[in-house]
Length: 330
Image: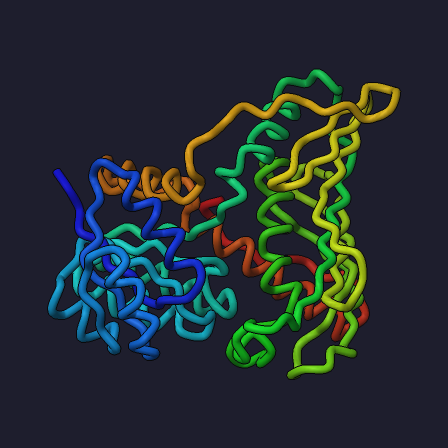
């Protein structure tokens, strides 16, 4: 059996989804929609599919089996509900929604519609991150003691759409966009969820009303402390997570490699090749559809990431450590 896939939004990430669909035996792309019809037309021509300016018209006409939502954060709920109401399974770009309340609305509606929704937390499929998780679970370095995650890169780069700098549309700045990846990485690697947050953010960004950087101290339900440090200002680019154990340490650099130390200097660790991360996302969604179960990146899990991100801002606003409000199911 093959499944027809429609893409909602023709931004940069849409091409990655279309490439992955081309690698999947059970998937066939049928259409793409974007309010900038030129962008939709370009990708449609490249992949031999139909283009639309209105995603609702596309869903109504095409009746795809799966809708991939790659819209700005403030439109995630609307597009997910519209697609689910018409019987589409949904692959939704992270974060799941603007806030945890919207996540709850999406989850309730999707379950009532008897379709599956999966959020694209790509950290679960990246080769270096998978290798790091295998090191943790092997116990070869002892017990995991703490994690330090750092993401520093210029955020107001040319070409970044303006909605990223509007809190009402994006939910926040760098700590929403890249912070979602960091929190997901911490939770997935530790097989636990963030339960406490103390954060200090900086709002000297030259564009919009979102933060330009910040640092947070987190504690997980497994009792493991972690820090997140992110800056969108000028400076050296950094993307690394250091994991300290009772018997050594790991240095994880996404897309670059994994290094290990059991007492001496870091040495590069082997990273087995993996399938395309976007293909693996689709495969997980297909398995959930065919087995009638929650996807690996479930709605409950994805909500926990959004709730932790919300807590970063609440902690900064109150100047206190705050508890993350969770839900059953993770």
